Image (spheres, rainbow, N blue to C red):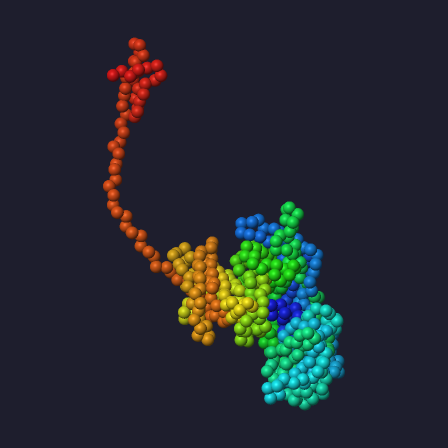
Length: 555
């Protein structure tokens, strides 16, 4: 399954709601708020966990360079809203259903929501809809109003909205012949190809156009299932000398989705097996704060229920380890323990490519963030690693914009990973890749039948769909405590397929030593000498005897 780390947050934070009950329509993206179901929620400091969420952040620390003592963070008090659509809650508590009977819902006026998923836009920009006629784009509906389920978003100066507008059914049928008569709340969503219909967003000095499909769905303004909105928090890192860490302040954009909470990619694609933590760190100073800083690393310690066992870790980062820490006191009768994530930021080339679409040739810029997804054993993604997935602990991070979750191939006994990022950097240079995989000892034994105590080596095979020749890649494999760490770099993008394998190294026989004669010393014997002083005579015995002071040797 494709993962786009920025798109993930956009899906969580920035897309407008399409109502969620049978009377209201279907959730378009992100959490599906089901009455009585647990909710995806933000992770805040355990010290400010006023919602009594089961899981929270124990601490955040910065290590400025390897070997330095961690600088423990403190909260600044600044809070950032978790999601403008309000679906990211402040705890995993179940949600309540809206108070509206089916009879009352039937009296509401049905509208057609014309939408596209490519966020995020300022509501003060001009919005219109275009149609391609004989290969030429023409204006279909000029100056349409942005739609938002929360009217407050329409007065915001922040680019938070997806291109969406609401039309009466009659008007929509006039413009879109695809809408049948009798269109209502029970009608299925209509998907229009992006090469036939598109939104135009006009900022005056610039214009942008959507590329992905435009959808038509029914809404009626009925009350939506809602949660108490959660927040993210900002951390600062004061040093003993009164200065601050070179990392600057940062925001921990972190969420937890419990097992059985529902996540939707589209109205027809949802899953309740999305048990996971998302930990996304962004600098408060600006996007280039961590540029070129290869030494800095962050340590985020999470209070987690013991029932959560991570099966796989992936993300955009480097120098990554995720481990269980010490046991913690029970919370609300639930056994708890620490999960400790240590990771560093990485430069990732960015383009406008959407997950699942073809990579673009050239990046428009770089980001220098650090983010991880920690998938639980009940997450569907973990199962891609095959029978050994139940052992957990495989960690895969890279500098790719998109990645396909690692898959175990039993035929070749390899872990397969696909990465997608623009072929060229913004300056036109070849964009080179970085991939880091950490395989626990128990998983290595399960997958390859190899114990890390032996003489082993890592191999990485790289292929491309277009048949292009791989560039020379550097592969480093080494034992790190109870894990085997594999780092490969220098391969080129845009869409490499990597197959990783650990094998037994052929033992090099040691040359037999040339026999040499051994000289054995004869054992020493005690001897006795006679010493005199005047008429007094003393006998002294030993291996190397000598006469006492004042005595002379008698010969």
